[in-house]
Image 1 (cartoon, rainbow, N blue to C red):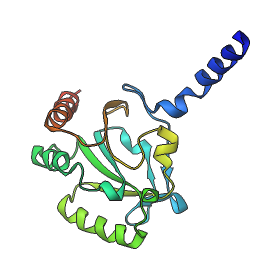
Image 2 (image 1 turned 135 degrees about the horizontal axis):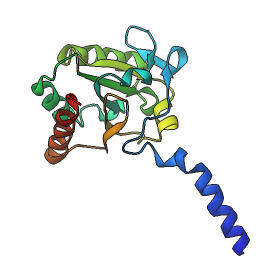
Image 3 (image 1 turned 60 degrees about the horizontal axis):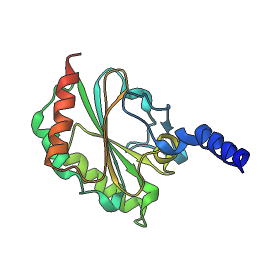
Length: 176
C-alpha cells in the first residue's frame, strides 16, 4: 500500500502543472490561436508572444458571462493608460457556450465599439483552458508584466477591491 501511495504521489507531481494553472511570476506556455483554433476578429492569428513589451491584461470570457467584469473593463478604460505601455485583450472562449458563433461575433463587434483599443480574439477550442489551466465557463482576468510574467489573476467577478488591486499592479509595472 505504501508503494501504491508513493506512485500516486509521483504521478500527481508529474501532472501537476496541467491542472494547477499558471502561477504568479510565471510566463505561460506559448499558445497560438489561428485557423480552426481561433484568432483575431479580422481572422489573423494571435500569439501569446504578444504579451511582451507592454503591460497586458487579458479578459478570458465565456460568452454567457460576457458582462460579469464590465466594471473592471470600464475602470481600465477610465485610467487611460498610455497605449505604448499598455494593451488589453478580450479572449472569447467560444466553446463555452451554446450560442452560435455568428451571434457571438456580432456581439464582439459591438464590444469593439465600446472598447476600441482592446484587441478581441476568439478561442474556438478552449486552448487557454487546456494549455494554461485557467478557469472555464467564467470571466477570468489575467495581467502580465513587460516580460510576459503573470502579475495578477482572478477567476470570476472582480469586486471593487480586486479592481483597485489590478490597477495598482498595472501602475506599479508601467515604468519598470
